[in-house]
Length: 341
Ligand SMILES: *Cc1c(COP(=O)(O)O)cnc(C)c1O
Image (tube, helix red, strand yellow):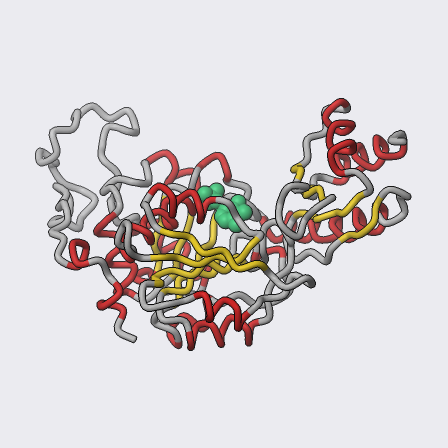
């Protein structure tokens, strides 16, 4: 498969916007090129459109070369860019597992791309044959969220690799929750699969949802197209600076605490009479099947505890999705549930 053949012709031929700073590498100089204000308030200069410093910090953390990293305004920017780069509106189609993250379908709808949804197996495993059968010559993108939101499970690596070998388009593996999983992610095998795009985010384990910083890892060719199509200054100076600073914080300890709490919460919840099933989770949330999801959801709201009601979602009837909080927050939840009749 030639990746270039999958690129929309107008994008293949795009002459990207060249910024004032593209031709000068240095940080010091007399900058009279971009019509900025010369008065330094910390933010008077345009940001680096290539986020070189942030990528050089992320590179050793992720084990990925800077040329294989894209940084976006949340993962949502990367998802939208992939549609705009690979899909022809009104012609191409994309495939997603179901249930899964809702943004894939919204991005497909916005870009006028048909989204084909393939229901997971009853045990939430990957329906490899049905996914491959759903594909045709116009299939450009396939979204596999692993660990999956809202089911919580990570998929078997050999299943994802078979899809990578046999799907005729780009396979996007969304690893927003990979830091909470004991299973390895796909980043280390990027070089083996030219059609693989791995999405990660600073929003979950790294605790930066408010900053909007999402990551994509792929071949230098695909990253090159993403850089050409994105807004030139998509990551602002303040976000870059704060992310750079927070990269030094002790995230592994927080991840360990969430994983310990996930186990404790699951064990405690299994003792309640209205809980029917707690699904295994590789993420920072639990999918919990209860007697009456709507009634329990309303009760928790009345107690000012907000969870996600997934009762209407395919394969998740009767289920609530509960984010693992601090030990104190989880204790509040467990106490309130004692009084639920
Ligand atoms: C939360 C989440 C993201 C993160 O999105 P951002 O735009 O980076 O905050 C991505 N994918 C999935 C499946 C998620 O649940």
